[in-house]
Image 1: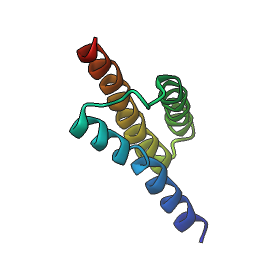
Image 2: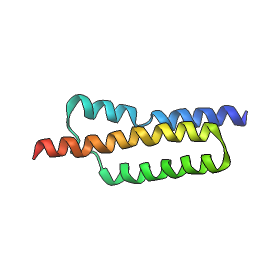
Image 3: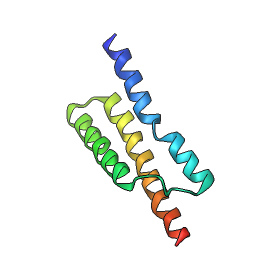
Length: 86
């Protein structure tokens, strides 16, 4: 039961940024997105990834590694589309 909860928690937290990334990519509008929030979130999941590596816990490494990449993608989109607007 614990593993199932952990798997679903990892899946949900990993895909949480996908709708925002898709919306930003499609509309090229990111004015209402907080770069500080995505920076904080990115640092958090990056540290979870490091923690997973230290514990040799593959599910933590995979889900948080993917989350790190997705959040970095959103962070890049924020700055890319804000530059286009200026």
